[in-house]
Image (cartoon, rainbow, N blue to C red; front, side, top):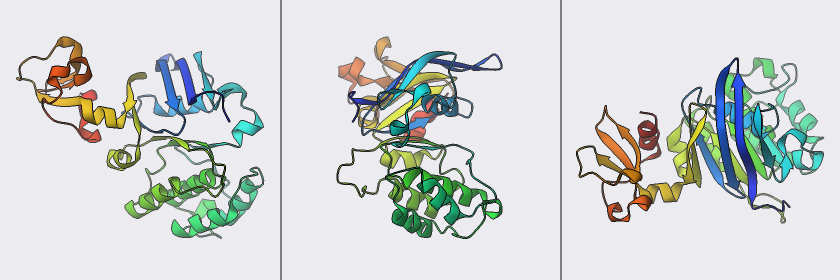
Length: 281
């Protein structure tokens, strides 16, 4: 059990690839048990952030803690509590699905093979199908299955449903939030990046927006629904301090009514799709 209230603590992460800044001074603290939707355009820095958080990339500056342990020095005990799915699955082409389940299971004391096999059936995965012969969607399903079957306390997922059809996405969401088999299980913390915002909207507790490598916004989704308001640009001018964004193309603006309580009932709440569009205008 971590001594901190945060499953993830990233402090001033900065990363550059080929002289291009992909993460720019990102500070992020994810409460234990939160389900965070990580959103942003392609190239916003989502994959780089997740890779830095799990210790697969060393940032140019800044640091990160996962479950109280430095991301670049994760011990075996912490690694066994983590699950990570990359945007491109890292699988063995010559092995079949069942062989993956049994091989990966040896590394995790919590591994639940019955759950893994049941999930394979629900996801319509051929147990004896070689990875090299699987479709991109089936490879993604297998990667998700392998990340879930050891019942991790912290799960980081980079576009896990991008290659899945709607039925497979529904089964994935069911599996993601299925009750663990262990009586001592802590609430699972999840960070999931996805462009399918309608799926995220139904399950997240928090939303993190990245734009050009900077963390533009991080808050509880319920708070954003309550306090962020979409107004026509020709509305009576709210206080400048309440402005979040202004879209000159659609002539709309977003304000945070917490900074201007008198505007709490103004305009209307937004969907996650609408908020994404306004923040990236």
